[in-house]
Length: 244
Image (cartoon, rainbow, N blue to C red; front, side, top):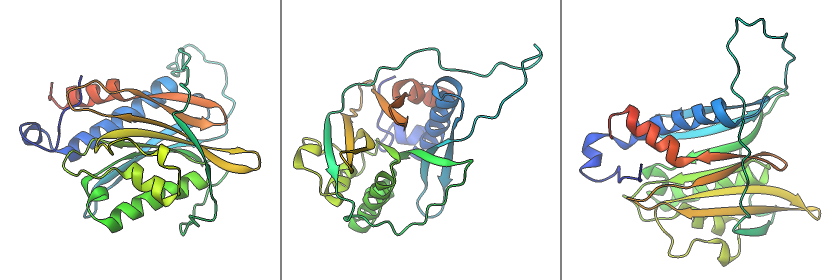
């Protein structure tokens, strides 16, 4: 299903963007957990419904606990059966660790090591300079901690490109920004250690209203990637909310 404009009539009158975001997040989580994430990883959505609703999706790595053999009465656990080939990154740049000292305290225990975050952009994230700076700082802090980040932005009501704000906050080369600063896009960031320093691989795709959406790479750990199937999950979310 091609991407629709959920922030202008007639679609905005049929389905609120907050409902779409909640449904899309649920579909992404179901797709990852049911099809792509290997044993030891789990994805879960987190909703923030204060003044400005926001939804993130986090993926954790957890120890694999040995299970007794199936007796034949239990349900089989979904496992990945298709190999995902990761495309070459569009850009790679070195991260300067002194630029973004994180003011957050991230606590991970042996059962929940955060490895990836998916950010579904809300209009409030793009509303004012302070909020755009806060969003960029949050993404930068994740990257500096070695966490993969994917930004999904289908907000047509605001023209700002938050990926450009992330590039500015991290002082990345101009080539890392998106040509024309499109307001709707998907970006996948893969931080990695190379030659004793921290760098980031980058995949960027413009999301166009009326066009199908791409599959984005989501790094779990090391060179282990799974596909983030935007088109399939978006279609599923719209279908279940009778927008088709």
